[in-house]
Length: 280
Image (cartoon, rainbow, N blue to C red; front, side, top):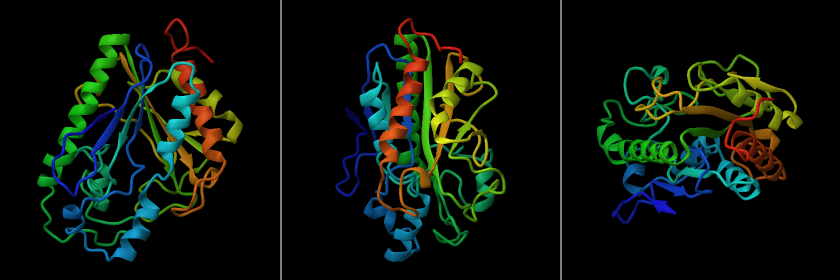
C-alpha cells in the first residue's frame, strides 16, 4: 500500500494506492467515499458540527470503498485501487480545477463553496489555491503516475470510477430531472469503448435497469491523457444508494457484497486471460 506523503499531524493520508495483480490494467478509482476532514480544513468551513455531519451524509458516496474491496477480493485478477482518504469537501479530485468545470455554477468546482442544498459552505472570497496545492495537485500527480505504470506494464489502463448517488435529487444537481436507474454508467466519447460499456451492462444487469449518463455523465481520466491517449479507457459506475445502504449516510446493507461481486465480474470481463476486453 502506498499513502500520500503528508507530515502534518492533523491530516489523514490523502489517498491510498492499493496494488492488484501485477499485469492487471484495471484501476478502480474511489474518490468520494471518505468523510475525513483535517482540522485545519475544518476551520475554514462555515457549518456547525451537526450541519456538517448532515452535509457529509448527503455528499459522501458512503461504502463505495467497501464495494471496491469486495470486487478486488472476488476478481480473478485483482484490480489496482486508488482510494481518496479525505472527504470531497476538502477538494474534489474529479473536478476540473479551472473554468472548464460546469459545477462552478453551483459553487462546486474543485473546492466547494456551496453545499448540496446551495447554502454557503465557505466564506465569500475564499481562496482555493492553498487547498489545490496541498491536496488536489499531489492527488492528480499520483493518479497520473498510477495510470502511467499500468500503461507501461499492461500496455493499456482501464479506469473504473466507483460512485453512488441518492435516490432523490439534491438541489445542487444540474441534471437531476432525468432518469435515476439502480445503476448509471457514465461514459466519454473518446475513452469509453463500446465493449467496456457492454461488459458493464452485463455485469450489473441483475440489479434492474442499467442506464447511461443520467443523472450523472462522464468519466475520470487524468488530464495528461484526457482526450489524447486511446490506450486509457474509462467508465463511471454510479450506484443508486437505496440498493445497498440506508439514506442519507446510513449503514451498509447486503447490497454491498452483491454489488462488489458484480463489479468483480466487470473487472474479469475487462481483463480476462489473454488481456482483451470481451465483447458482450
